[in-house]
Image 1 (cartoon, one colour):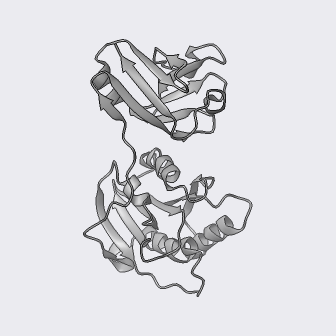
Image 2 (cartoon, rainbow, N blue to C red):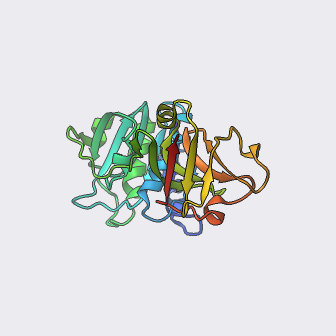
Image 3 (spheres, rainbow, N blue to C red):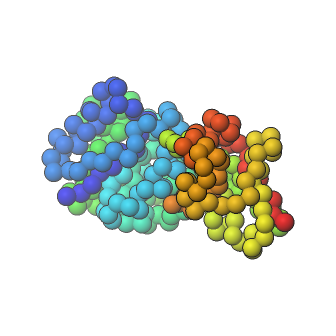
Length: 261
């Protein structure tokens, strides 16, 4: 049984999501559909790429991931199917794949050429992505549904932390459902610059600072703030039983600075 995942900004109150699932089951009754999330902020490809990058490896190889974010076909935003790390990704080339392929190398990319069975051009996820996904789930090859892309163009790149001898400057790239502010500062980068030295993590108006790295959220008393490296090895600013983004003013793109002494 092949798994088909859905990552979208469609929400759950309208009929769109049900139509997609209905179309999948109509084409492949044995499919196993898993919702990664359908609550991506509308058109936010950075958020979608972050969420998908952090969980796709937990699915078995051969899983097919449909991404429904800004899916209308244009001259600049073409429809692609990508094979990478043994997984398939189907979506629009609107910068999303550039962000996804920031850390993983594509094995093959095809530009989808599936003919729609309807004149509606506003629902590519149902009319193009689903047939492509079901074709792959049945064991079909990528060459049947598209022409190979040899010169993939990077359209969008993720901000990297700025690294100096005694400082790292990063930003908040995601806020999760608990209000944890996740940064683009990796554990590897942090330890490479720290080299056993003391440090201060500064944010807000820089009257907020943290000088230790916790190993668990309950390592401080509620509702104290803490810094921790999550499962994805990215630095988080969090609060034990509190929402760090609201209580500490840590919104997207807020600057986080680490000074080493």
